[in-house]
View: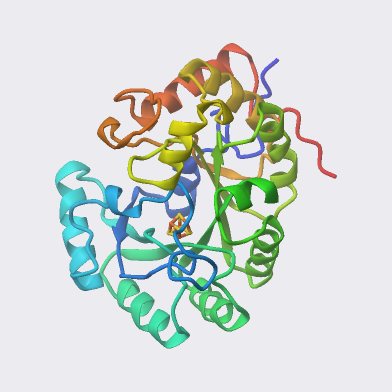
Length: 318
Ligand code: SF4
């Protein structure tokens, strides 16, 4: 039997990002990507050299987004880009996605983020970073901003297993991710996480067990991606020589997996995405063709309905 109301107080069968935002802001909010020219300690030798084995940040930036332009210029061009496509959006979140967006001295971060927040219509910041690129001083600055703006720090966790994190050369442990998320939440700042399914050496039951592990973290939002092996990466070479080490999900298998995962996931977590999309021309491994993430979402929602299940159906708080 379907409950009349889920804990997130709408009728969709998962704690949807779109609905969360509608409730939080009362209107449509558009994210605008900004590339502020940050680098990454996992590429410059601080944590390691060479980066994560799957990393190819260069391929997917929107056209308006380039560190050669000022932050205000990128926001202005991004707002125009989205205005043409989605006329209703008049409020924005500046999305700092490329590389590690807290990997700079505090004075530089202040200058950049204050600039972004000065753009008309920007209600907050979404800041992608690594667990080893944050400290108390930076968190205090973001906590101050969070008193008046929507501020979320999104951490790349990718896997809860240190053996996987070592193999993909993440340059940090799961313990560091847990600690960074805990500290961020303690400062009253929203926390997000990014997880990849299908990393080498992980079985389906390893990945399913992550639902319980992640559910214990003080997270607000979460994003999932199926692994997509991108050309010209170390992982593409690894896949070419050992394809049997990778569990590739067909679309049907992924939908089945994600539903079983979400059933065990903390219902308080807002799910931002279930899957990722990389243009097929960039792929060095199997993919799902030209299928868009919103089409995958529709299929997942239909399957949740068909199975009469929902996010957190089998979640038990420890
Ligand atoms: S942390 Fe991000 S930017 Fe740095 S190497 Fe890994 S995927 Fe690339």
